[in-house]
Length: 565
Image (cartoon, rainbow, N blue to C red; front, side, top):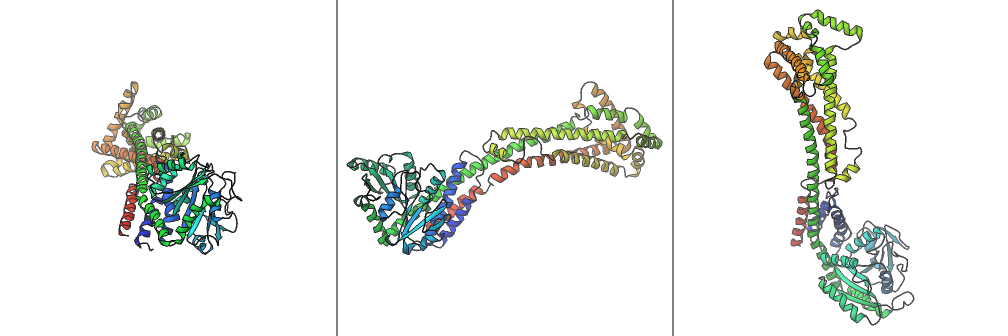
């Protein structure tokens, strides 16, 4: 048999798309989808691609089942030698054991099948290994693999059992008369039915004389589950002979397996059934993974929108703080009154001597000029506003994320607490406010460069004019009450008239507007940086918009390749 050339390539593309499926968010269906994705990748790597590349390779028959069902004893009895450990200690099979004809050993020594398991020949294997047992009395074309328990108390054994079953051409599933109706066996059998896997069931440990009652009951359950035509073998519970099942009890199964090995057409039919069923099952399995990716995308969008809403509110809070005049309180108000309310500033406009005197006084006393003190108070006030709104946005985002799918684990995994500003925010905010003040002074210099205004600006001083422009940015009394309205309103009105006298009415409005826009742009940049802490977490774990369509496109590509086969 040969596989169509395009089928392995389409299967590889699908495998890579599933392996890259972004399922990092803790959504309700996330864990199941991650298991499903691992299952698809492992089956493609362990079975589908190797089998497509070598359709004539030996038939890999995996013997699986529940704890204590007697799998290892059954394998030993089929072979007629103690090739795998059987006993009362559970779990007995810790590492899988593969028995094959010596002439078929090369088919399993490399990484063609189950590439993730290291090979061990000539001795017992340990965890993460596949023990190979070549024998001269096993017919060529048949390999038996004793798998760990599907319901093992050891999680890694359960996962390995599922992986091995997915890599099988043929399942020989072993259950017992006492446990054949248990949930776990039927979960496994339903998986076989969904994937179209070739299957035989061994009903082990049947009390003598009870086979006529129990076997038909199990056969009926198999038919009702859609597993019609499954070969059912019954093994009665009898004393072992030198550790093996009585020959008459194991001979029907041994004879059937040997017949498959001897008949190339029958063996090829089993391979085609399982291969075709496994390939066909991928469409629905990948569709489920794609749906989970879409669920992740919706969760990621909700998380991003929560952060965006919180930081948009912070931006609006800063804008309101700037426009409302609420910054002209406390220290800023006191420094402004000192700057314009005493009349010294007025006199400095009329005489350069006053300006020189202020400088000399400041140099002798070490006290900053009133303009510098006003700028410092404004700087502190604006920094406080930025910090308060950024803190509030961070806290609001964290609170919302805790109630959204995928949010809590992202918060836990973050390198730093996210319910407050980042550690470097205060320094960054201070730098932005200082740069903004420098920008305002540059505006004043630019506006005062004309012949009509140059002398007036020089008589006033760039720092003094700049401080007045900064106050003009916030000079609205909406945030002031009571006596503050009268005081601040009066003093800012004086400053406004003097600014208009120096620059003109239109120029003052333009200066204040440009200064306000620049401050808001800087605030927006700071908040975007803070919001990026949250967005980066979502981007690292959540899918992009094309993830689910790419999965579906890969599945469609495989379906098209199968149709052409």
